[in-house]
Amino acid sequence: MHAALRILVVSCTLLVAACSGLSLDGKTPRSLDFLNNDVSGLLLAFDLPAALEPVDGESILRLDLVSPDAGERHIAAVLVPATSGELAGTLPAPADQRSYYLFQLSADDQAQIAEAQAWGRSLPQGSVRLDASLSPRLCRIGEIDPDKLRISVLATLPGAASGLSPLIANQPLRELLKADATSNVPRCAGHSG
Image 1 (tube, rainbow, N blue to C red):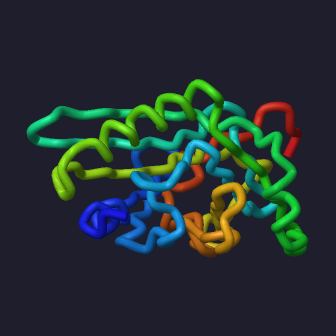
Image 2: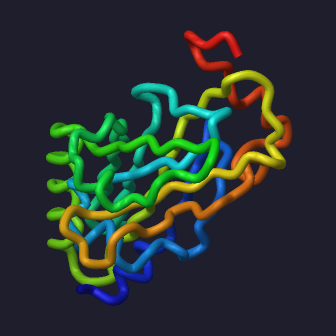
C-alpha cells in the first residue's frame, strides 16, 4: 500500500441531500482504501429510522482522483439495491423502529471505478489526491424532527475480515442537513404519512 495515498484517501466527505453534508474528517475506516482496495464490490447498509427511506436511484458515491501533472478522473456512481446476501448476513437485527437498506454499485460503475483506480495507482506515489463522498438521497414518511432522528451508514468489501465499518455512526439528521432540514427531505412517494 502507498502510505501517502492512504493518508489522502481518508479525506472523505459524506453528503446528504443537496450539497449539505457531514465531513468524516479522516475517520474513514482503514479497511476502506478507495485507491488500493477493489472497492467495485463495495456494499453499503443505510441504517435509517422508520420515518426515513432512501429515494430509489438517487444516492450517489463520488470518487474524484486528481493529479496536477496527469489529469483527473471523476466518477458519480449511482447506488443500486444490493443483490448480495453477504452483507445482510453480517448485520445484527435492526433496532426497534429502524430498517436497513442495502446498496451496491452497478456493473458499469464498477468498471469505471476499477479503471480510475488503475490509473491512480499507475502514477508516482503521492502524486494523486482522492476524494470520496457519499450523497444519500432520503425521503420522509410524515413529519420529522431532525434533532431526534439519527442516521448510520455501514460499509464493507466482500470477504473483508474486518467486517462492517461505519462511514456515518449514529449522526443526528440535523447535522447532515442544512438549517431547514424538513424542507430538504421530501415526502416519500406512495406513502400517506
